[in-house]
Length: 137
Ligand code: DQA
Image 1: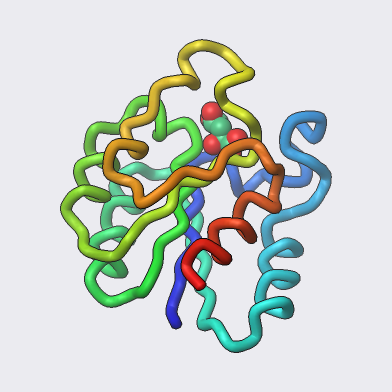
Image 2 (image 1 turned 180 degrees about the vertical axis):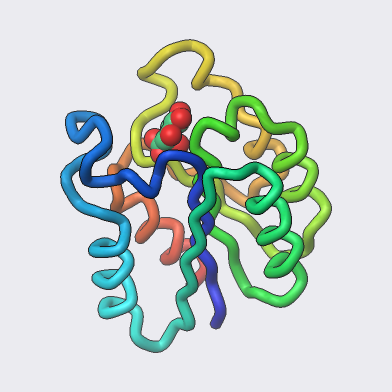
């Protein structure tokens, strides 16, 4: 089974960025632990700070992979383009957030991804990604 995690803007700074919100672990460290935990899965990881690159990656993987785990980060709340891309592809996409976006500022309560997601996992820290993997098994 091929699953890709796609992370959006500023998530390359995990571990350094607002650790009280996002924790002290880098995504590379966490991704290595996921690969160790799910050795039978082909897990891929892509991160970009650029909206169009995220859309391109959704197009590249969205007709061949078995699952997409998407944390579009701030673009979640602004990007009609990424929302449309999730709608356009056939691979089921699970929307993930590290923090509980509903307990934060009101602009984080809106998501252009959710209407077209298979499901949504929000607020469990980095473990949100593991829960998303399990949702595909
Ligand atoms: C986030 C929540 C977003 O509101 C924020 O812009 C992020 C990260 C999360 O995983 O909690 O960058 O997607």
